[in-house]
Image (cartoon, rainbow, N blue to C red):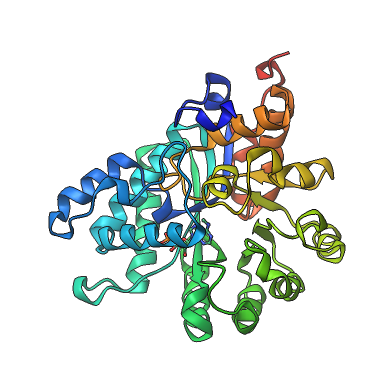
Length: 353
Ligand code: 6MZ
């Protein structure tokens, strides 16, 4: 499969220049190799090598091994200063890839040894977003506070309460909540009260659903909320062991899917690009948004993900424009405060014939 050997970050100019919307990007999974180098220099005593923080070209890992990689990165990012640098670098990199609207998500962490608190964590990400805005970068950035499912219902509820505070005070920068973390750990059902509370207070919900086959019962319950967007949804449809009733719930509520091709291949939840569930949902005409997931860990970027979708599924440049443009309908920022239609809307003259 020649696609498989595509050089990292090699997307051609059409995809690079395409104005894009990124809706599924975990902050600490998005750290580039350049930023990792800076972090390693700051913390030489950890003896972390770059090979421990990224899954390179042609490599695959089990999903479990992917989650070990995040633990290594978390060791490198444990102060306010680190978070500020990481968030600014990640935003600049997305902007340089012609991403015009970005929703970053991250799990607030507390680090007793450095004095980092969950509240400071969120404040620091917000400060990074504001600094990037002041720099004049052509990108509109919002933040989703993430719940790591392995931490259980109490932490989930505390996270929702924290997110609620920022929903009121962050000038519309905090717009929602993400449920993520190792899908083989924890119980989504027990998190329902926290998620319901988040929904009731106006936080938009993006939930990782059916990322692994064992999550179907839980996904069925979580779909009843319903969430505003679904992360991955790899095993929802009947062709891969899901069910028509799960698909019907997604269709009935018109819940967009955030689809991350390289992540699913490298994490081995999907056997090859041609079998990616993008095909199933795209053929149904269901809102499907191409995203990166963890551009640093999986050595990709959004241009490359669009190019992979195009070459795998035979999509024309025009179809790719449309796909990218339709992502605007799935963003969480309130419509009143986005100048997006100006910056993202493709001009007809830009679409190659
Ligand atoms: C589920 C994932 C993920 O929050 O420290 N995360 N959760 N599935 C995935 N598919 C590969 N990729 C990343 O970023 C890292 C965290 O994001 C979640 C995990 O909880 C991971 O620890 P933050 O910025």
